[in-house]
Length: 93
Image (cartoon, rainbow, N blue to C red; front, side):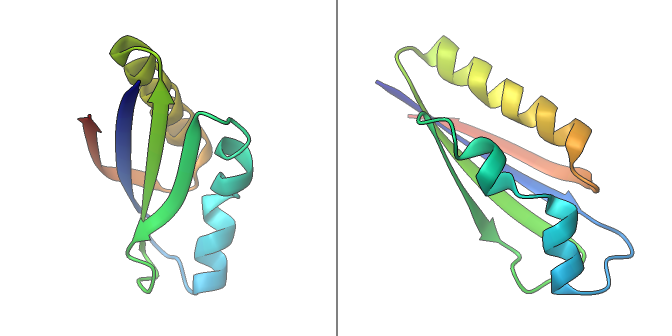
């Protein structure tokens, strides 16, 4: 079993409230939480209006599969979130 931890920080200029911030992030729990190999949570910057940090924990049979799934998640987030990715970190256990 291989575990990957993908953490992304998003910058959302012009975000005026926590409610707007949640709407702009667009239901990441619902989209990625359906996959039994992925756990997702808002891991930081919860009280800042213009920044949001999310972590994804991926479980896979091989490190290559874990890396592939992390890449898929990152690519999808880059296209769908109403904000700019300002930092990405990956760790594999």
